[in-house]
Length: 353
Ligand SMILES: NC(=O)c1ccc[n+]([C@@H]2O[C@H](COP(=O)([O-])OP(=O)(O)OC[C@H]3O[C@@H](n4cnc5c(N)ncnc54)[C@H](OP(=O)(O)O)[C@@H]3O)[C@@H](O)[C@H]2O)c1
Image 1 (cartoon, rainbow, N blue to C red):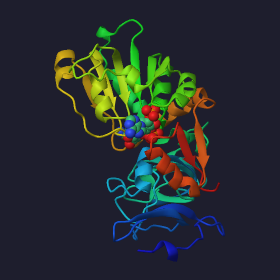
Image 2: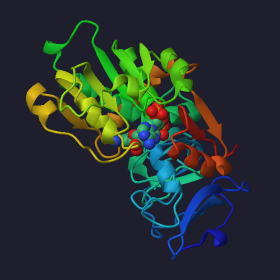
Image 3: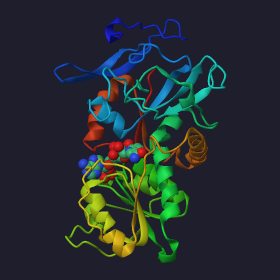
Image 4: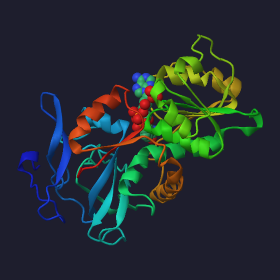
């Protein structure tokens, strides 16, 4: 395997320009270090398939999973060294995947940033089948403000639409989004509000309230104000649908407050992966707990449709959704802040910034 220090700093297709990445390395003693390094063609598959395409990355979304990869979490960082980044947008270098040279593209999931190098780089090599045309109307940075967070929010909202039993709906029914100040949380608030739901945003951060209201939240409150954490196995049924990005104790408490025939989309585990609950919400209220896995569930054809829906939603978000742009050398700091739960909205890494 080519080592980072031996790597060429000459980017294919960009003569003379330095090809760089943010790379994390796990040493044999288990210690992990990350930083900006020269990008090299392919660390993990020296016989890269002939179908691999090269993307000049203009922007990469910053997800919770990427923060875990940056700190060497073994469940995400499956190879060393690794360039994190599960989302990227840019342009094709050379014609490929039925698209011409220079075509605007997006790539998400497909093991990038986990078992193969991802988007925190000026360049990305991926199988042709993983690359999708970027919807007209979305710049690379705009597409990455949405990224996997946007795809996940849409998948959760669609799933709840199918599952929530409307026969038991109340007038002015409320739907809940937890971890609402995060990337997925804010986009879930926006998706639900756009489809006419009365959304309550649950966040620990008062500083996120104005942005959440602008995105369509009817109310914004802290977990302790919204969730009955008494030891009863059922609390008063309030929520028709819930998008949960937090997991753990909060998800267990929320499940007790879902009304008859309601449903919860479980997305994340920022607050823990245990689920200390009982069967009562399920067998006494017919509540559904539905898992969302944006990495493996949608086919490429479904992703194309989701991307066109995100592009249609974007004008509603453009001036309201907090998005920061970061250079490669700010990746480590952002990862630490995100894992401490201090960030609001999304960050987009701009490798040439
Ligand atoms: N299933 C899927 O396909 C899929 C796809 C994308 C993301 N995810 C998962 O969804 C979650 C959110 O991802 P994201 O990219 O939106 O991350 P993010 O921007 O960091 O948002 C996570 C939010 O969770 C809350 N949070 C963080 N730490 C917490 C803690 N210790 N206790 C309680 N709440 C905490 C915070 O919201 P408040 O401060 O507002 O409460 C934070 O803003 C992550 O667990 C991620 O892995 C899953």
